[in-house]
Amino acid sequence: MCVSGSEAGSVVKRDVQAEMSVSITAATQDMVEKVKALEVTSTAQTYMEDSKAKIQPLVEKVQAEATKLQEQVKPFIANIEDQIKPLTDNFNAQVKPLTAMMEKFFQKVMDQTKALLPPQ
Image (tube, rainbow, N blue to C red; front, top):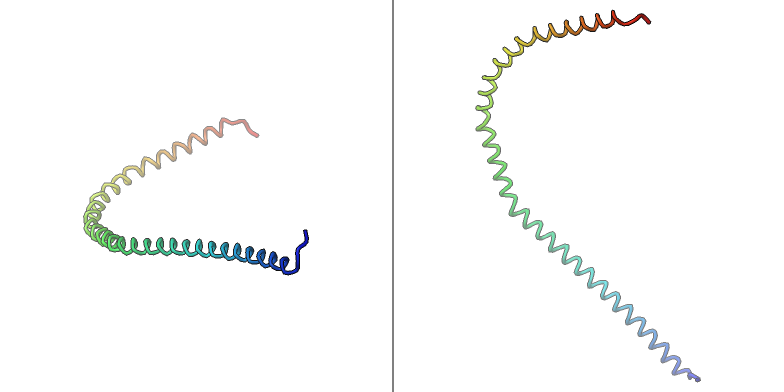
């Protein structure tokens, strides 16, 4: 089979056109995928911004209510602290001699135990 010059040129031209067509198709598909990805990203970002805009007033309201509640509770906490302080002071005054006595007792036990040990 013999291919003439014009036929060979025609075959090469068709191959080049086919390769270009495949390259253009691949590039077009790649661009379409990138555009879709950008659209998804943009949609997600818009959704997040809209959600934040809707939630922000609620967050601010909750913070304001929490601050008000904290201010309302402060006097009650101060009152409880005032009532408990004398009790804890009294408890500490009663426990202090007991702890001192226990420290002396344990020191005496340690000294006696050391006296029982054989000399080294």
